[in-house]
Amino acid sequence: MQGSITLVVILAVSVVAQATAAWIALHQMANGIGRYRAPWGCVALALVLMVERRLAPLWRQIEYGETSNMNDAIFGMAISLFMVAGIYGIGWLFTDIKTLANTDSLTGLANRRNVLKCAQREIERAARAKRPLAFMMFDIDHFKRINDTYGHPAGDAVLRAVADVVRTELRRIDTVGRIGGEEFLVILPETDQENATVAAERIRSTIALHEFLIGDARIGITISIGLVVSDITTNSVTVEGVLKTTDEALYAAKNGGRNRVVLLP
Image (cartoon, rainbow, N blue to C red; front, side, top):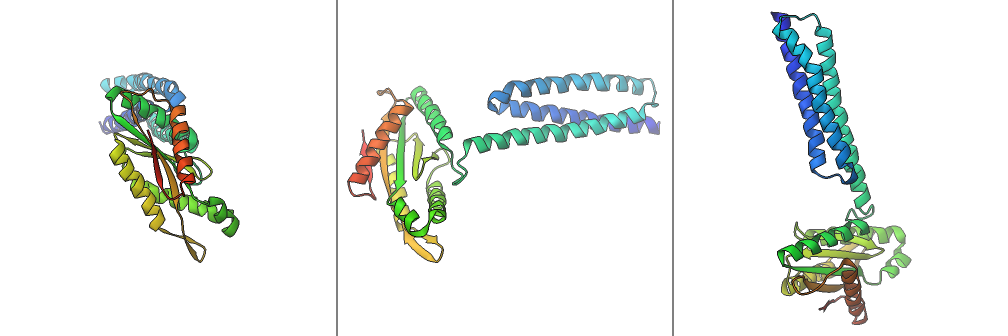
């Protein structure tokens, strides 16, 4: 009797462990890890079949009062627990690889590839919902002077600090990414011209008022912002078009004296 109870406990742990492993695999698949979606589906199916294949004979042993295969049951439980750890580890690895592939290593923001992919997704979403969508491109004024005066490590520190400040000024639904050098792109969903202008001016003024610490020196930094608000209901908007127009607006802000926001239709 005692052996049967122990076997039931062991099998119950095995069932929970393997079910957990299957759930992790399915969860990762549902999260859509790009091209890994199909492999995760195969893993989940294999786990379900393994549960049936492995546990059915042991359940029959309990039903008929046979407990001679206790070692097999313990081994099965160990394999099940190892499977949970393995599947979780693989899922963590894939997630980490995805994060590295989509993140700018210096600032922790979305990298160029990722932010442009987000831009395309937001354009499609805005078109379906028939809602406005704003983009702003900005860069740090006289950034080369910072590198020349304080060195490239100081320039990297400034980029990280600017990224942190901008991140705190955005909503959860907004996206900011570094698209190259000292240039950044911000995506503002559900944002009309008035609110986009307010957001851009808030970011510009926050950076201008912030003191950036470089070694023992405290310096002031300004940014120039090119702003575009697209009415998806009337305009044919593409990522390439957005980059071109925001770049033109940024160029106009630079030519207009820097430390300003220029809005182009």
